[in-house]
Image (cartoon, rainbow, N blue to C red; front, side):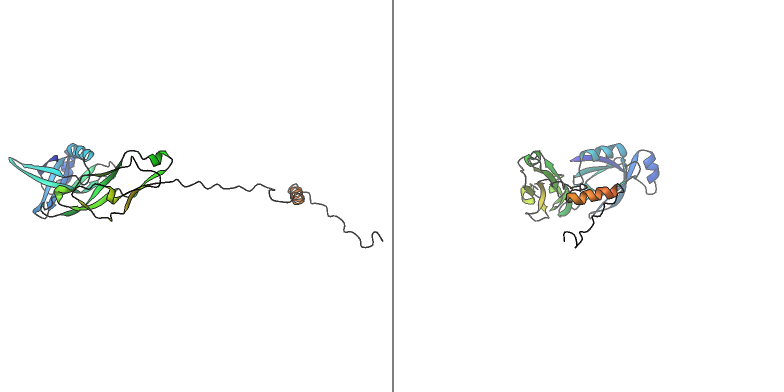
Amino acid sequence: MTVLKAQPRKSGKANALREQGYVPAVVYGPTIESMPIAVDKKDLQYLFSKITRSSRIDLAIKDGKKAKKLDVFVKDIQYNPITDTPVHVDFYHPDVGHPLKLHVPFKLLGEAPGVKAGGVLNVLYRTILVHSLPKDIPPLVTADVSNLQLGEAIRVKDVDFGKAEPLLPLERTLATVTAPRRAEVEVAEIPGEGIEPETAAEEAAVAEGEAPQEQPEASAEEGE
């Protein structure tokens, strides 16, 4: 389990903490009172580069000589819209004896032969909601696509969730390799194509500004 150090903080000091290189945070849960804390910005960014949103974190809160450790999950993260750095974090300390629902990231491993054959790999779920005791929540669930051929799929029943229960039907498709759509070829109309030769000649003459000459009608008296 990943360890993150923290310290208690007083309310109303958020901006001052950020200027000193700390990120304001709060930890709460059904068995504890809400507690405002502060964590080192560099430690937090390093932590986020190593964990997922369903990873369990050992939060070590040190207040002078006293220290308290809490098993927590990241509940919410607020980011600066300009720098994209975290400015506030909510940590959730669950009741260890009661199951909870949590979204677990889903990742595919390997390269599918169906993709090498020209297919397209479609991932339908990036996270999967599971139900489990906190200690059994996986930080990540994976599926190997090394044998996935064109037209085949990975379903919930094909994935190992450990002791956690996926809250999706077992036959639900999570990823599939499909044939690429054929590009629709637009046939451009070629001027004159499909027109009788005489008509085409007449239209060409009109385009040049020359009206086709009308042929005199045969007189009924001719040939008598």
